[in-house]
Image 1 (tube, helix red, strand yellow):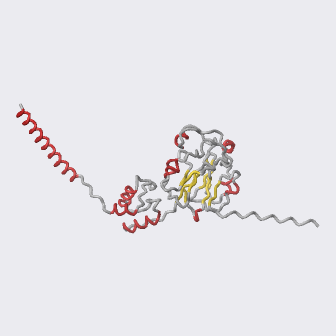
Image 2 (image 1 turned 30 degrees about the vertical axis):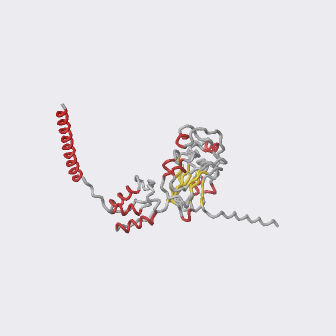
Image 3 (image 1 turned 45 degrees about the vertical axis):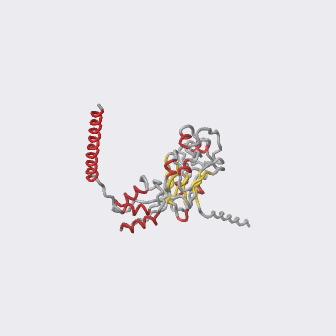
Length: 291
């Protein structure tokens, strides 16, 4: 009986060994048949990229960007926001391509509904994430379009370029640290963060509101809400401002930073950043006394 068992064991071992060997041979030939030889330049390009894997380029990460760059015939439309133009120039020189200069971008918070401008009307005691709060209520200030103040954008930023201001309840974007990766834009459930041109000397003008409610309703919840009056549209001589759905929008590609629109806004909804203080208006000369 033991001899029969031993024979079965031997046959089983030999059979399994033969099957394993055959499978190994088949896998070897399959691997050789479908082997992909990777372009060595991909590693060279990947080494020059910052390795943040932030997705700001629109791809899954730096490795995916490196592959796309090597396969592309031109660098037009391809960029690495954290690396900027300097990195793209180095990559262009490596591949023998021409780097196209792109205007630096930066994240901008299009909401000024601070606790001062939009006083809290209710208290939120749920899960402290904007994504969750957005599905439950309009917001403590009552604006269904405004910042919820839970800081999802700050958590998403890998570059410490944002923090929550305890006094205002709004996130603050640090110009010198923001790399325009777009992570904060993607995570905000109310899309109040926008990528805009950084501007000369970091100067920017934009409507700091996305409320599309009618003027009276918007103003009731937030003192600095855009009321859709259209005065800024009439003031702009460059067709850079449009009015749609009770909301004004400034096209950063057309805006010349002339600063003529902010003074005409009755609610101060237009933000102007990093400009020198406005000079006070000259006092009108007194009319000459009648003889």
